[in-house]
Structures are given as C-alpha cells and as structure tokens.
Length: 335
Figure 1 (cartoon, rainbow, N blue to C red):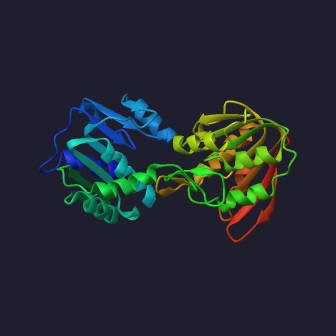
Figure 2 (spheres, helix red, strand yellow; figure 1 turned 180 degrees about the vertical axis):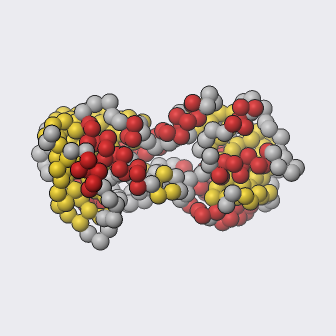
Figure 3 (cartoon, rainbow, N blue to C red; figure 1 turned 60 degrees about the vertical axis):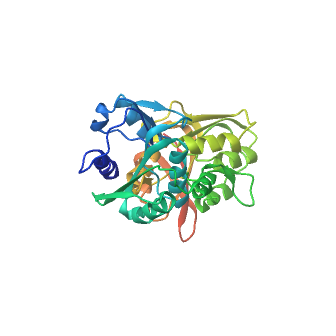
C-alpha cells in the first residue's frame, strides 16, 4: 500500500478527523479498502497500471479530469515541482466554496516544501506526519490567494519545448527538453526502417516522430505509453500521420501484435522508486514481440544490466554507441 495514501487517509480517521464526504474527487487516484465506505468517490488516474488497480477495486473512474465542483478533492501528486503545483491548481479549480483540499506525498520528494507552498496560497493549513510522508489540508474560506493558484494553473497547460515544435506538459517524462538518451538513439537510426514498428514507452512521441520522418517505408507504427497525458501530447506531435496508432497500455503485460522493428528508451522508475526490473520487463516484451529477423533499438543508462536479458530473450546484440551516461544497443531476433 502506498504510504502517502495511508497518511492521507489519517485526515479522515485520526484525532479531530474530517468527515467522509458524500462526494469527493481524487486526483492521482489509488485504491484503498477504506474507500469502500465512501459513497460518491470519483477517481482520475492517468497511469495505466494504477488506473487498472482502481478499476479492479470497483471504484468509479473517469478517463479525463472532469469539470464541476466537489466538497472534498484529494490529491496524490507526482514528484516534479511543476506537476505538484499544477495538481494543487487542478484541485482548487474543482473545489466547492467551503470545500477542503487534501494532499499527501513522501518526505523524500519535498513534502514539507510543498506544504509551505500550499499554506502560502491558503493562509492556514493542517498537517499530519507519518509513514515518512506528510498529509496536509486546507478548507476554503474566501481568503485564498487566487492569483497564486492561477499562476500554478498555467503549469497544467501544454507547452512547446524551446527550439522545437514538440508539445509536452508538466509531469510527463522529459517535459522540458529532448531526453539525451532518446537523442542518441535517433542519431543512430537508419533511414531504411520498414514494415511494422513499435515504440515502447513512447512518451510524447519523439522517437516515433523522428523514425517516421527518416523512414518513409514504415508501413505502420504503434506507440505504446502508460501515461495518458504523454499519449495526448504524442497525438499532437504526430498529428496527420495516418501510419500511427496510439495505445494507452502497460508494456510489461505484453503486446497485442508482432513487429519488424521495436524502438525503446525503457523507464526504470515507478513513481518515486528505482525499478531496474521495469526495464528488464520491457526487453522481455520486445523479445517476445519481434518477428524473426526483427531488430530492437535500445538506449539505456550505461550501468543497467540489460545485456543478460537480451541473451535470455534469444537476441543477438551489439553495442554501437556510448557516452558517459548512455549506451545504445542494436539487437536482432534470429531464432
């Protein structure tokens, strides 16, 4: 169970608890057994596997963050500054007059600092510290600094990466610049890719866009991404190219088809934790989904032990480029 969520729920069960509301909106929703007693809880969760967990718990979920107002808005924000402040602003915009905003996050990503940010906007705040996390909440009383919330709301909007035509937004991977690992992969892509191509963990679409631009013989490209916000940006960045299909999908669960070429810069973080096994799972999926003679283009941090997984997957590979941080591997399925 997420310790930040456990801490958040203490606001409704500790000393001098908040009453469980008749209706509530949960931004960054994750399930908990206590929610079985909440009569009107609606969750929004852009990360695929967490959304699936919410669904399996039988709770109400929406794909798009809804408009409207709620007496209570819960927030489990991400880890970047802009994403956290944007989450506060999204919650504020959906709060009824006199409603309560409740947020929680781990101390390791600056919970105390963000509590001060919210206190600056609301004037007063209550706080609970437990599980190496902090939950903090404030009730709207007509005196909140709406100018500050408006500044934070600007962070929810999509923006272009400077010097490019690419659109991104706060909270998604590499939202302020082109990731240097992905740039290394693109710099070594040939211009003769063809057939069916998959981009695993495609984010806002950089690898897909560059592959399609360089290789007109690509017949189809499937972009798989677990973050719905990044997928929305990819649709903007690749708009007009009929070869592309977009999939809100958790790659670790396998792919629905087989491919001639697979591109990937696999993630190795889940939430706030490092997960080397996540990248390994991506490679296993790629190995299972490549056609005979298919090629995998993989970029990763140099220290990550992915070569053994490539061998286990029956792929022959070579390292074609590296620098102080990244390595680029090309692998082929011959069996």
